[in-house]
Image (cartoon, rainbow over the protein chains, first blue to last red):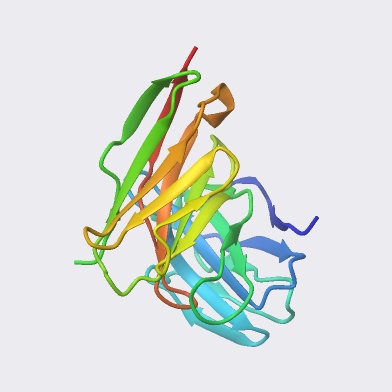
Length: 114
Length: 111
């Protein structure tokens, strides 16, 4: 079955360190997304990509970057981790452009910045 | 402002009863809606979706109702089971990347 795999599932890092969260999807979807989920908030969009070499900022992109070198992977990098970036991160994907595309999620990466 | 919200943060139901989870949205331009189930420690799982040209859609034990007049979405779960205990949230879609997610309702199934 097609799926989205995130790694690591849990990580503790120190303030100021660079962290990369991996996301790999086997849906062969064009669109990939990174969200963060915090108490009291719905999922908030960090970055998204419509395809290889395409990346776009979402509503909470400060301090994060992504790259898309192939269809399957969209790694999320925290350039210099901050305590405010302690959160649960979800990678997601959808098939094509336009509305009406179901968005599928990975199992999440729990990040703690100390 | 733009928002997708839920009326009840926690819903407790007896096993075997039907559950109804509600969601309000504010943008009439949204044309696609999704319900997700999220269990503790896991990612959101797709349950059912509905397009704005429909007012009802049924799946296995679940039904989604869309009332565009009052901008209201509901998820009905028939014969609620212990495995249905989770957080449920709705999402509205307005474009390729524009998904607005609600904060969720926790469903507790009482034995």
